[in-house]
Length: 227
Image 1 (tube, rainbow, N blue to C red):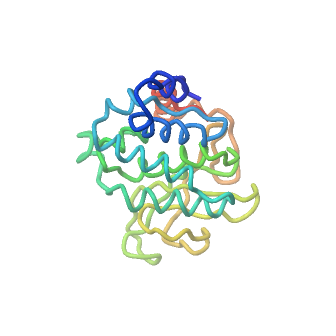
Image 2: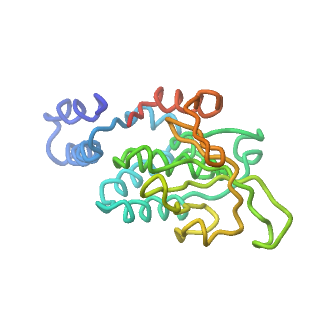
């Protein structure tokens, strides 16, 4: 738990209950994400008023999320698909390959497919989902449908109830969560999480070879995220 979540209410005890109530509510939101740390209000404020609004709404979603994996997947997927606008990195960040933290995404209100996946991954980890159940997955998306030969690089989040079962796919392109077999338009390339990389049926623990991913994890830590 970040220090700001604990000491802020104490510093305002003399200000009266009316002034104290909004801070107490924020403190309770911090407490509800069990075993995790969130960025301080000062850190969030650096990304602007829009980031602050979306961050508060996101915290409320996390605290009202269902207790089952399926409910949490649904709540997280719907939040980002409805509240964040899709845009290419070249439009949002003026560069082709940028990996944004959730706070950066909140500040822009826009994200490419990687931004959506990263935000959903972080959210589910903060909710206590087991790390081996979710993987960021690069795919080739068939443009025009499953029979098309035209593909485009894309990223989705895959959920595995157990390591050997068919995954469920969380995608910013559609709000419904579907089994991989119902997404023939997606051709898997490789997947990864904080522990491993999977290429085909082979697992490799050298995840640090993914430089962009390692840099993103360092940024998350700097911002105050821990899960």
